[in-house]
Length: 345
Image (cartoon, one colour):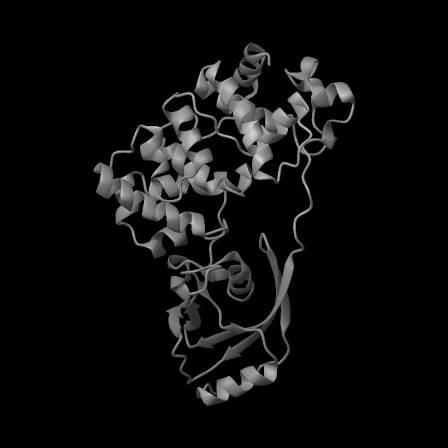
């Protein structure tokens, strides 16, 4: 691979990203966690405000989990942020709040895997460790003509080894960011800009005339659809919310909802002394998660009395201070737009 051409291209075409100007280990860690299964454009709406709210490992470690989740609500895949919070507390306790500088100590941080550890070591510390993400897999499989199913661990391990050999031959910080940036801007999954690629001369996929044929990715399982009856219950200036305890969206606040018929919900409302009860017509909302779709029939109910042992009455004006998943934020935003802010660049 013509590494000088790749680095030269990167120096001319790299995006101005907030974590590139001063690549600290903490900043790179936060950016890589946010970028897991999330587009760069979305992350850029959250990264600056997150660093402003939690500028140091100490501030992140000492914050409550609820404060952290509130800051990242809307990004999805929230288990990564629970692990990140645990990681900050681990660094505070095990390393006195100083980010560790060896690969072995970095990968020991809760939630940090091979890719994230490699990215921190290469970008923050300029050490020769591979960081093999989807962009890298796409660039290298096309360049070297690797005709293996990239959903298989053995195939990804093969690409990682090729990546490791290249990072050993280069300045790690520049090379790692350059190959990632090439995959994001030029060697895209669909309609790659091969004419603008600095590696086209020796690229197998370009020479074959079918660059989109690689990488090979087998189809994933079908997305599951869940149908909910979701209730907005308002009492004066408060709304009923439930803190979720299941794995998906754990520790987030949800509107009460059930996978059942509306008659069963009406019975629950009566048994818990919610009055008056008049559900009326519903409005349908839909939200797509990574592995499932929620279709929600939403009913609005204003009550004077009622009790839910699993719920909490939250002031409408305080909704921005608790973590609410986007699936339910879009509902609340529709009915009470004055109480929820939207992240903006």
